[in-house]
Length: 138
Image (cartoon, rainbow, N blue to C red; front, side):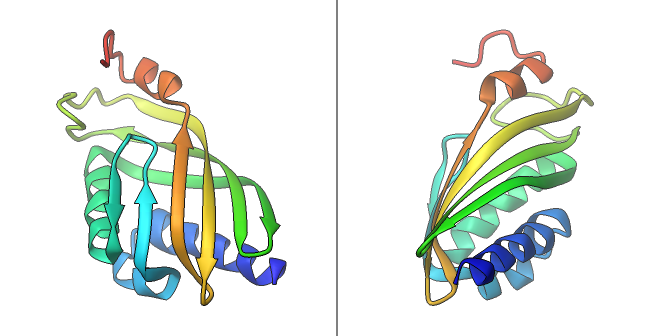
């Protein structure tokens, strides 16, 4: 089971996030997915997830996820990642800086029927905001 979940996670990040193939989301995401992104948004369902991903793709061109660690236990997994890209689009009212961003994060997954049914992403937002030259992000 652990190997299968690890493989799903690797393919999910490569296909959905790095290749930006949102039309493949249904292969990885349960129809009832709940997704909490590191930027404080919570979305439900595949369409909600896709809208969230499109927002990130428009804010960060060449957004790329590198998996550092994967720990699987039963139907749950924890993944440590490094995110990188260029801040080329508006994000939550922050104008594009053109800065290259790189920050760490973790995602906690729950699986059902070999698909992601719950994902909770925690990112190092202090590092991200610092790279966006945002003096006050409250």
